[in-house]
Length: 480
Image (cartoon, rainbow, N blue to C red):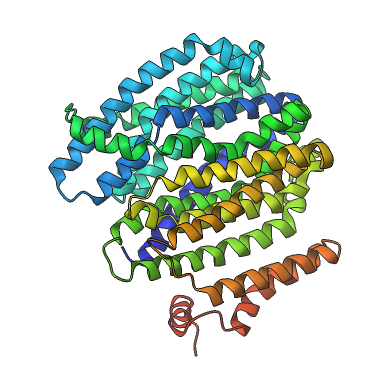
């Protein structure tokens, strides 16, 4: 797969991910207009629990499966790897799901309160189905079947959206039905992927393959937990240090970072199969660095656009209401910080190939763990002094330190030769345009002017290579 093919697959995944995330995003207006911030805070905490528990349910087997399957050349072994991985996940899901259901009251007490035990039980059901879907979805990515992958994602969110509109929007039922909707959607999506499972599985469990998979996967348990801590611990800390209302306000604005997350996740879906396929090439580090430059080019533009116009986007009228209930607008100032944090998360993905290829995945939990500790410490310091919005700064600090440390770690065994001059040009131009917009009163006219200036300044500072200029001209049929 070439860089152009990587770009095309990123577009397919990106478009599909955008559609699915956008459909999912439509729930935000519904929730902000139908739920009080306190209720939305509870919903956010339950979804945070699902994200944490999902790490235990999958325990890195999806990552291990991608690595072993992606580098395996023999078709017979590929089927054995899938069968062994899936059978193991099926057994572990039944065991862990049953155990969690048995102690669901205790889990509720620790997370959102014992009165929400039913929501925790529904969450366990969602987790079970989502875990069984994980490996087949990885297989689709490895087989370069983005359309099938996107179809499954779309089916899930459309079911969730439809049921939420009916139960929450029209019938105005309790928040229980948000999770009942999700459980039904996950169950039906699993049924849609069953034919693929049956076609691939051989009902053969190989202990030797399992041992290799499990050993590779093991570090991803602490790594995954630390990663989720970086992303979601702020919700619980806001709940502990402030209240559920603050969680709801913060979560609503944090979710507006979804537009950057879409790009990061689209890149991730195409990136992992790409770098595994390029691992044996002599110029792989240079290719990976070039991909990183393109990633920063796109995400920096999106960062500027969303930062400049998010205040106006949330005010777009839908019928007699704005997209987001004005009650939630107070926390919009965190959006640029969230966007920047997601860019750092994307850079972390760019720098992952060496860790995968050289089997140095033990570094991942260490890096994520350090970031999580910084995040937690910063939350304890910042929230009491500056309020719940400062939790976004804590997340940014955690991600940025993680990326810097990762750069120096991989330098020792798989140096990534970043295109420093071009990265610096992107950083300086983006920083100056953002600061100028901010010091001029965050005016939309300045924002629009800066968006137009972004590509012009890149040309003035000779960012693009001659080959890139030629490629752009050929695509847009510009004349010399």
